[in-house]
Image (tube, rainbow over the protein chains, first blue to last red):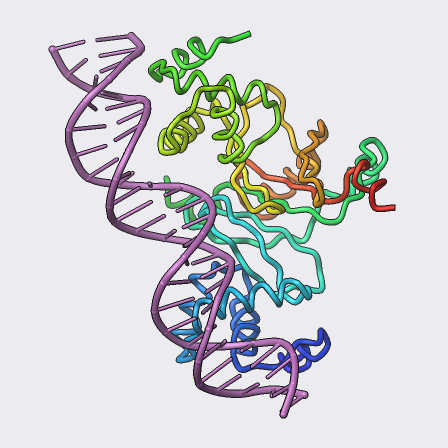
Length: 141
Length: 141
DNA sequence: GTCGTTGCAAATTCTTTGCACCTGA
DNA sequence: TCAGGTGCAAAGAATTTGCAACGAC
């Protein structure tokens, strides 16, 4: 279990209360959240942080790979999450927008072919799977 | 070969000069383009279209599935392309931002598992593979 | 003490909207 | 004819920036 202090020190970023709050928030929330949700969370926990600071913090933390930015095409918003030790993808429900983590990743099955056939050096990938979660599917009936 | 007129008629959308121009542009450009690139293209071909109209056209054409919207996380911009008869994904170069279409799709290999294990009804998916294209890799040397 | 970080307000960028006019069917 | 489409200008939302004050090391 790493404290925000330790994490920040490890990547040579100064410790600040704001960065700690944001890291704690993301650890709490567990799933990817929008900037708005992050802002709301801080407010509702009596630790309001200026929006510019939130954006700047997201920038610096993602540059040093402590957090990960993605884009949710259903809600059309930028999402942020703590970088986890294990590679993850999500199922996104088009109805309730919940993001369900899955462990599997289909990439490795085509990685070699890509690097080979297209002479393309793969750095990373983003996968978003949209559909209907079980809960919302049952509500529809 | 379908003319814009035919395409629009098929989906019950009125033919207009602007819609035709945009469909032609996307057919010409072949790869996904940003709204800005689309706008530039129209301008430079002596067919400037008001930006609101471009946005509105993108909306209506994507609703009827004539075009496809996606998000490029490298350039952080919304991309638009003509819907193709064959399912496609792209390799995105982090350096020159070129988008290289690939034919393969790794999804089918995990689709069953997802629908089964997660009780999730998959509608669609987005995959973006970032890295370095051969051209940019050689320039780096 | 220094340099990076923050808050605030203003600027910028991207996208949407209201409305009068226009145009395709 | 007339419902739907367009241009324009203005509004909105999301994000970035300049700058003075502040805080970590």
